[in-house]
Image 1: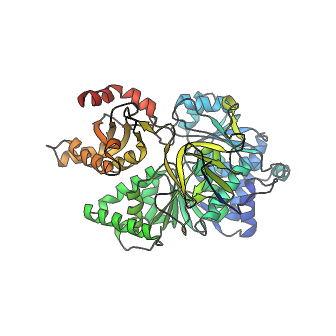
Image 2: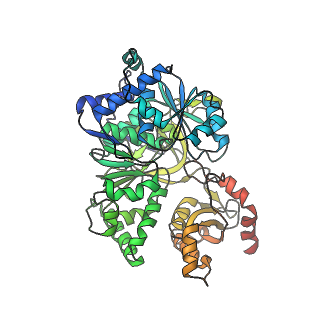
Image 3: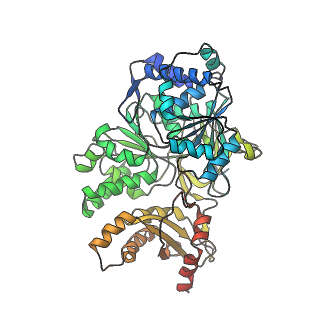
Length: 554
């Protein structure tokens, strides 16, 4: 072990505590406090939320849902999804989230491997997809579930709630691996409780505010933020996804958000209509200077801040790397991005940047009660009560931890004064034929920031130099072509490549690129459900284009 960072004094629930305790305790403490809010404006206090969760749990008991039964849920984030989450887990049932973007084969694998016995879906189309994938019996609709939240209490409800312990299974979350079938990662009540509570504690009073949750509840990041909001007392507006978030910010006026970098980049591109290139560059420069000083966010009076709602001060960002210029852009308008790091096997959160100790270029310090170590080969290792007990079904023989209890993340990183910096992936570091190690993600992140670019994948493993496949945003390209009928978009994209190359040495730089038709999408099998590149599939799909890049450069 090269180095270890530990943050002490973590919150650990009692052995008899389940996730439902977060809901019931909030209702007991302050029943009139605002809690979850639906997309249609319906608002629940903590007392009303507890009442509706208990009513819905009672109806699940009426439907013979037993402790340990798996309940597969397919749909976008909504109040009904959150209520079902809390109600099912309150009586010991196990939630199995299914991504709305999952393919038929992926859904079939999840249902079969999890052995789900009960099913819920947002829409009739989603229900049909579950049925086609092997769901037996009735598929409950979100509308139907919403009606259950107004029912009567089951006589056995309290006994069933009391029987659920911290080490009982709460969820089986299927990891969206870049190769092979997804593995069902088991998340216990203790795992999620520890992560949610300590994420809230790590960030001070951040979760004692207003937020808009548009992360998918089908992903463990969304689940962690949901329960952190319930634990911290946030007023939480639930929206289906990021496309719904952008136009709603000015109306809902959040004080903080939790997003993935892809969403932050999309919002940044959206706000470019309010700025000149010079104003954007000035904001980035101003923001990076503020972040370097460790300055607290301050309100700015401009169109961009107004588009954010006027009160937004912090964004928790996780799930992938974030380009520093995007962090600088937001800081230039009074919004500090708090990078975090985690993985499904640790119920999302391993490290979280705190408002008082935020450091640019890192992903924060370990959340309370967590150990983070760096192995001899540079791999990030994690140990703590939030680490998954293992995998379900076909992957049950694979252990997530070693004999000493360390979870091997597959990420490469370093610890700087207790702060973690992620530098690459063990399996994604490219090694050119000249022996140069290249981390592709920083290059990809920077190229993707260009307004015309939709996505980018860097190539170079075993090759003499580094190249890239680039896709363009169809709508922005059409507008650009109308304004520049005689120009080649490749000349504009070259500027994005040059900008990315400024981050690295000459042997690591992109020497050639190809603009490929279409885009890298989940439906095409080129992105995971969490929007990570499926590098092997992309390389296979565009093998001719890749080969031509090297032939043309000799």
